[in-house]
Length: 454
Image 1 (cartoon, one colour):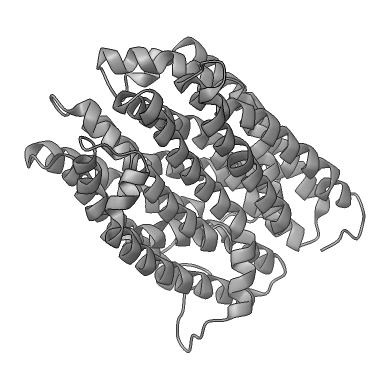
Image 2 (tube, one colour; image 1 turned 135 degrees about the horizontal axis):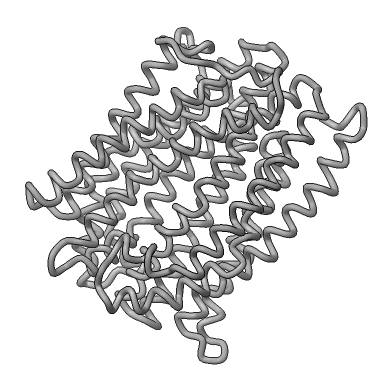
């Protein structure tokens, strides 16, 4: 299996970042289709689209937790793999990848068992009502047995990208996304399975992506996944987990915020506002995907050149990533502010839901531009193996700022549901600036020293 590989050590930094980020952008957009397409189709189920969409939204915290553990061992190990390759230590890079996959499999099996065993109390904890529970349960009971496939495709794909095979990484997601697009209408409408059909289509699609990843990493990659004579290396696993904790906490705290938001929206607005949050979360995922792909594309460039001690290229990559992210988020903020109905109607045509979503969306996305600084700071910390900073700022924005404000603001000055949506822009401003300024004052300053601290 042949694939074009990017040489992170040569050429212009911005060209390498674009070359890495472009396929990642396509891949991440396609990855969104796994769940976005589900929401678009489910929102159009005749006579029950709104309540079915709310039910699906209740599953987000569980789905996000699966992604969190995928990031823990996937995104956690990939920068270490890049740094090892930059030092020409391929054996260390292979060891990191093998131990990461061992943990992905172990965590996937555990999450499946726990999720299926406790799905009912969890869904009610997340804000389910007697009306929305059947839809949420119908989806999640089918989705959870495919957790190992999800974690294999999400967790191992960064190791393909870290080797420079970003087009192959894109094809991983393309295979699953196209399968999902084709299978969704068949299972949802043709076979009349509704939300259960959406879950079946997703699991099949993730299985195909997982099979593709394993085929490439065992046969076509420069660094091959090999379990011959494998024994878990717990010091290596600790290093992977420590660095991956930042990405894990970002996803984990996302799940925490979703639970808090659904609970307060159910109290102050009912099922319709859980549907509103489902739509807004979907739009947010679409809106932040390009800036996320940009930072992901910069990560292997930064990590490789840091390992090779080419610090000028590291600083250039950070600057380029930040500037592009700022311009993009500023443009998107304008589009979301002036044309909210266009984006909302991608997911639903029901007038009550659209009318409720427009003002909520204006509040939620206010100051969206500050996300660029959060992404730039987090990506730099992770790329340079500064796990402590990365973990702290992951926790700060969501767990310390958003979650408490989500519970507090609805009770302040009669804000109600508006208070739930207001927590996000406050966290973007405070958390984003704190993360970026700290990055500039610490690791970027150290890179000016000929012998920065490792």
